Length: 249
Image 1 (cartoon, helix red, strand yellow):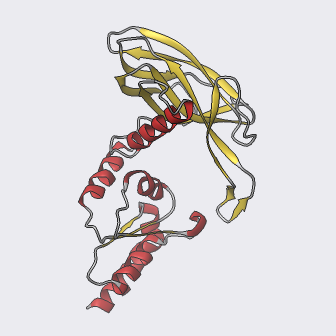
Image 2 (cartoon, rainbow, N blue to C red; image 1 turned 180 degrees about the horizontal axis):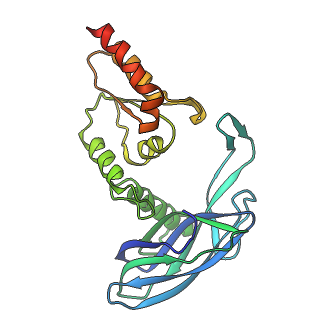
């Protein structure tokens, strides 16, 4: 989510507000406003180092680093890239209602991938343990089924979260690339005994329905579900269903 004046609903209380994100085209920083439930506000500033440089700036630290990144759907660059963590102290005893992120300059973009509020207490494990706890909390919030505040497709999020809760333990899942893969990754909980498929490097066109049909033929006694968007269904999904129906009947 690029900082562009969004108002993000964040309910809860704690001693700090944590950010996961990265700058692009250089380190990025900006200001925003925290609004509390009592109507009071607090201005904050946060900075993020560049995703490609893998070197923290003052006020942030590396949360995680990958060994490579996808240049396109068919190529991978063997260069490490990073996501960073920074935090802002919250006013004591107050409950956060929302966070407003002000627009950053177009030439230097700052992306925020998660917000989480927490106790901010450094335990015996030190800063690393506190960071691990915030990362875990952020993951739970992103995958809990709540509509993500930066996304207008809240209904899609709710549907996928509800589907995840209803899936049998031996379900076979597949997904097409694009938005469907986004919900697939964020909302579906893969449990032991399930099978899950996704196209390599997210490059295969409209594979969700063919994957699901093939899985059903191979494992007839198991539920096979494909998550695809309207474009994928129009491009190939509908054409795959008719031959499968003819083969079954």
